[in-house]
Amino acid sequence: MKTEPEDLYQQIHKDILDNLDEELELELEETVGPGSGSAESKDTDRDFRRTYFRELFRLQTELVKLQDWVVKTGKKIVILFEGRDAAGKGGVIKRISQRMNPRICRVAALPAPNNRERTQWYFQRYVAHLPAAGEIVLFDRSWYNRAGVERVMEFCTPEEYEQFFNDVPEFEKMLVRSGIQLMKYWFSITDAEQEFRFHARIQDPLKQWKLSPMDLQSRTRWEDYTKAKEIMLQRTSIPEAPWSVVHAVDKKKARLNCIAHLLSQVPYEEVSHTPITLPERIHHADYHRHDVPKEMWVPEAY
Image (cartoon, rainbow, N blue to C red; front, top):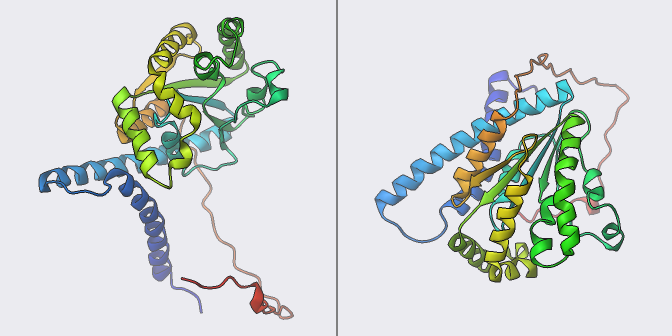
């Protein structure tokens, strides 16, 4: 029996809401959390959440338009996300890529270099992840590791550190000349906010994996990281690829501000699409569906 168009619309509408609800519930847990508060503060939180979700969905709709434009025009976009541990880089990357095609918008989150990679040209392992035409790549940390953690933790020599500053402007100019649009974001948080987020991760079994021994060491070297960041921003913000600093103490505002700024940097236009018509299924008289053996079924525990 065929589903009536109105019934089908209602089912589709419910399915969309179900998917959104699941994501909203995760967001709400992060926003609200346990604890009590005054009625006035709860109303304020509720109003802010409404605004946040409304704007997030609107911006994600624009990101899909950007994606379509990138595919149509063959543009190549690279976006770097840098910042202290727990600054919110992963959160904004998730919201940017959440509704985009993973074959078009890819996330590159490289682990520490292995022994072979340590002997390569420093930028070599990052080059392998650069986009082809019609692709967007989001780097969750990037070649700027050398100017930050490698410098502070002494994973590179002073000579390698200085060589990086000589090379990186030329490297990035080369990327831009090749047709890549390069954007660089630094997520800025306070000492107190990082401490709070680390404590939150320690208390949350689902987020403890985010805390590495290196993250914990970074707490004792806050000032060293500050000095390294200041030098990095000063020496590597070039006209072809300037740094943009995001106020990131408020995670949700940071996400919205970053996405809005990103969209403002690309001259994308909405791409028209041919209306899609679902073809009728073809039935064959000699087709017989075979039963799946019982032992193959996943037990219905829920």
